[in-house]
Image (cartoon, rainbow over all chains, first blue to last red; front, side, top):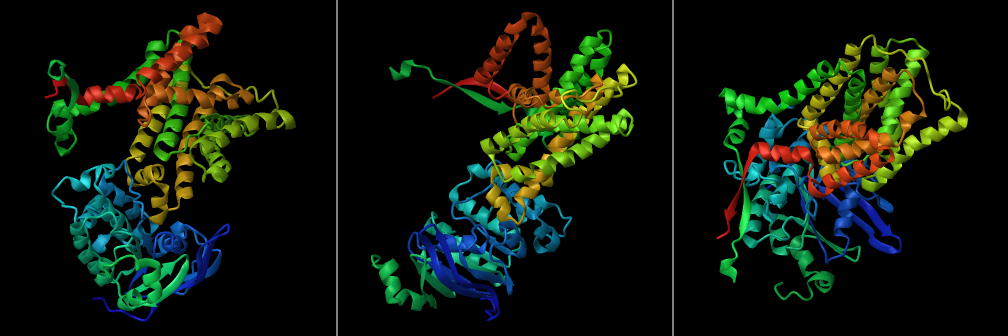
Length: 259
Length: 341
């Protein structure tokens, strides 16, 4: 696995997000170190996606602050946050439906960040973006010689769309990759092909936050897990500690006999 | 009974020549080269020969120019609506701003028409883009209704404060030196705008613009400013619109509040629908149908608008895809009926 460090990359300091009277997040703190794969679990409506929206700038937290590499990013615009290297997938997939799959990646490859950093595997800033895009898709399991990368994104099945979401993030060369439920809606075999991919990306030095409902698969890749319930942080720690925490069992796993 | 009913469906197959010329093999034979070139040449030559054909009838020459003016405004509308996702009713605003700036440059600063038009095109586009900046976060019907306010606001402002020549406008603006400069200046401008925009939407930068229409949240998540991208697109669209306005006032040597008339925002929509949305060429074809039709119907007096409306309704109901999309399909595909087994 990756060299896990204790160098904090993302610090979330007592963030609260209120929508009118609803407290979607209440005083949540979390530190993510470089090289970590942090899992965020919790029942539906516990504020997982809200937290991600706060980190990536899609929402401005009511209270609290978020720092990336020690720099305050609270309330920054989403494209500014993405430009700094925090890239996210969307839970409800948002491909560019009217474009071929590989063209979906040309958009992030045309972003200021991608131009600055250069293409995939040092492809150079003037490299042909279409080729780089197909390279990334191949890495994600789109068969290069098949017609799949050239099909309209709107015609692709869910499994490919999830990979496409990942691909759009990878094209940005992220430092911190936030995956919002990449495993949900996938078959067991599709997930088992995604897990090694996640491990590989982490080994390449990408720090990750993964919001998941699929705990078995999550615990294979995550080294730390935070549990949320009704916007409150219940506990944080090693996967096994979290899963055995009585409050987590009560809030989330109470009815599941598998665990 | 089920087996007695013969069911058929229409099958569409790409023509061989289309498939072959889609790739590098396009240069393999004259047939494929001409397959690709023919439609483009037809349009270009059509416009280039138009003044020669129309020169004996100056009135119809002016109608030809009106086609170009409407075509420019329609391209601008089509680009914003179908490539950027901004349904703009501000065509009249672009047009009026271009017209007024060119008039001021010509009458006050004494710039010759050609220079005044070029300067007004660029200055006007900057003015329009800055003016529209506050409404760029809006989308769909909201953007449409706000942009509709701009030309209306300009008319009221000019009337109320008696600025920019008030209701009189500017008169005595220099015209063009000859029939031919007038004709070809506009036609070349139209062809340049058309082919430049068509090229642009297929570049990577154009792809980003189209992505904003498809899914702006994803564009944001890719570290690209959506408002910035929209501003660039509005700049391109208003370049086209301002050029049309600036050119027109030099044709008729005066400018007034009619340059902000609502027709100039609405007619491009009709031309785009008839010609085919999202094709950029379609709106030009639409304009080439609508303007002469409107002229031919002048004899009908007030019934003119009835006939006009019927034609438009007919197109929307029976050919809602637009002429260009229809023709492209016929040109690229073979259609045949096959039995369903």
